Image (cartoon, rainbow, N blue to C red; front, side, top):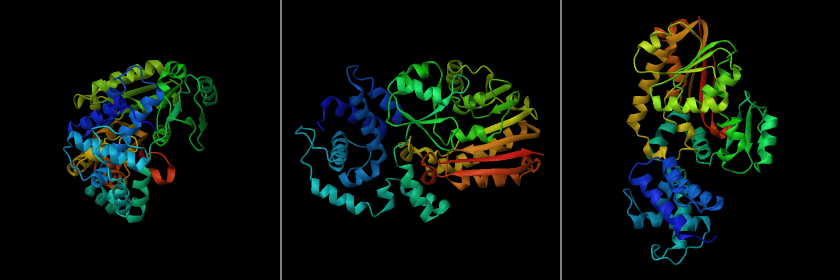
Length: 403
């Protein structure tokens, strides 16, 4: 493989932004891909995948290269050189690349593979929390699975098409997909491709959504005609899934504290042909009080550490801090206490997170059920989705029913 300067410079600049300027990896990649309109699909793939790869293995590569944050430009080139050596890519004779001790790099790599926090390239504290909450054996398997590159999974928008028709449409546009057993509306891309440029996307035939995330809306057990509240809707991936499951009948109230996310949801809803969604910004407690005891179904897709989705957000390993974890557990309980009030007697509620930690999941549900607000609810069932077992994101969902 021959390296091209302009592509490698885009990678180095992006790594600087991510590691030193705290820019989110997806934003840095987006910016990098706009640098040169002449780049073809292969060039863009190289830039995006190399950035994500070095971000994912930052700790391992830094240890091998003997560099530390904040990274100077020569440090970033050293990280890149380590990546090349471990990928078996011949280093070009550029003045930015110092003489590279290939054998020492490979020897150091073999040595570090014996230590999990380096092998899986994670901060000490995340490794400690993982062992503490999941146990040595499960955590070792889980963090290895969470370091694999996430596959691209689509969810068929059944308001506009069927899974079989979507598969044919994508095939006609040169994109091969396959069904996934146990996931009703999911299609998995055989090879990564930019699906957002397809006619199928423009026609609202699908959304990109991980297979584990597709389980949540179904867990809510919705029916056409119901009044459903999605309390932490964000840009609405699960809201849109609920709309298809309800066949556009009934009312979905999508709420979030961020108006900008709800604006994105409106755009997506138009493309999806989902017209039973109302959006509401949670700017005061009044919004919740107005709906007290009125909803057939309430979804709490709670804010969380996001440890179950680090396959697609590898930079979150470095941005996440221990104090945030303590803070978010407080927020999760607060959200459960407040938002559960919207469920009417006989109604159901799902509490979900994209975390694999019991302290954010089943322990939060147990704490809620033992509280005053939770005494009106009974536990129906829950599901712990671990990445090393499912092959998809780590998730948790619990179904509760109001007495």
